[in-house]
Length: 272
Image 1 (cartoon, rainbow, N blue to C red):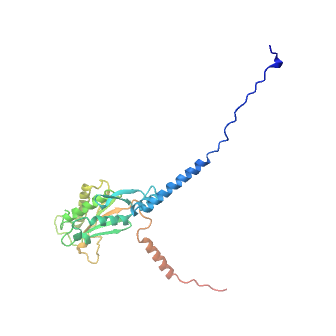
Image 2 (cartoon, rainbow, N blue to C red):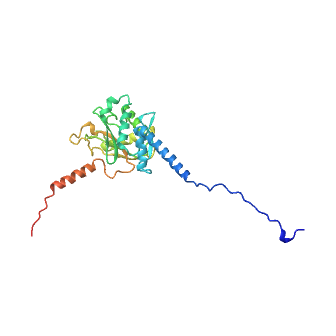
Image 3 (cartoon, rainbow, N blue to C red):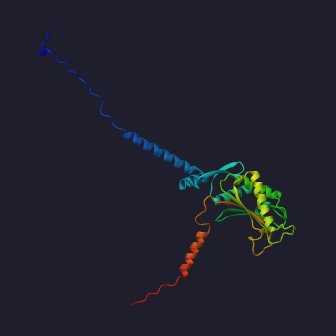
């Protein structure tokens, strides 16, 4: 028997592990490289895109929650969908002008449709002729031309989230019908007739916020009160957000400032 002083010595050897871990720095560098490549591809795609896409993307980054949102609409033609900034009234005006050219009798009525960008929005005016272009003479019933034009407007404007206002105006000739029916009733009835027909075509029930009848109180040609061009129906596409300065107001302010500078007397200095 072996005694306690002669117990065998047992040596335990451990194998050495692999070299120390190199860390994850390379993963961060690779992720940065992939991100940079993706950004490059997006820039190249934008450079090769048309102006509509560029405006849509630019509008989103300028105001992601507001006017940068885009709405699909068929302004260029009845079947084509383009991107349109909701409050880009100049672009909306251009698209409606393109849609007008699709109307068979466009040449006959082109001089009777006027569009202007105002502080309230895009104003689309349907001007009458002495024979009656869009409404039958002395009546709130739309003519064939009037129905065709109102149908085109309804099919385009219904795709926008903007509210609408419809106005009716007459010239200064007194309405000859008896029974108390006057230019006030005629102007309001024509505006409401346009609203009703456009709603049947496609406008949302709540899209028209106001129907106004002005009779002859806002003449387009004040120097010629009985001019048939004063008889008109106006469709106003309102801004989602009213601009801080209506179109043309900045120019007026600058002009006023310059005039003020010219009129300002020179300061006199006195020596003591």
